[in-house]
Length: 123
Image (cartoon, rainbow, N blue to C red; front, side, top):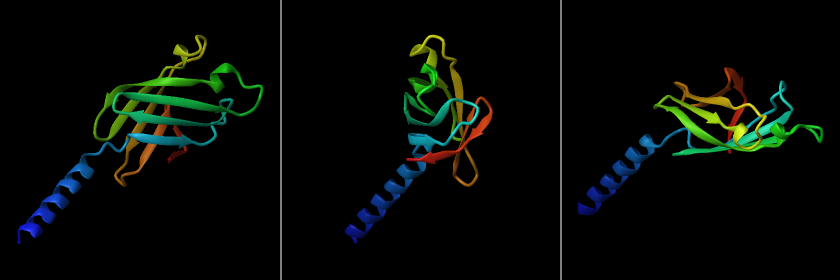
């Protein structure tokens, strides 16, 4: 009987922890961004911010399209996380931008860069 109770308690604790896990944390990839000289990008979100990495579309891409930049959390809730991608901290003439992650009713995360939806994949 005691083993059964311990097993039930363990299952409860694991389930509770899984429900509390932040859906935005982890490694992500973004497909082509046609308006930019970027083939694709990847980023990792941590509890304190993260890192953004661009992969240029070709050898003539500028320094901004080749940059790896820090990200800082500006807004955080159960359904939304807004991050500032600080490209200007790496290359002074690059423009920073906001990355907004939204958790939908279907538990899927959608990403927006300055309001434009991006093709997002969890790595």
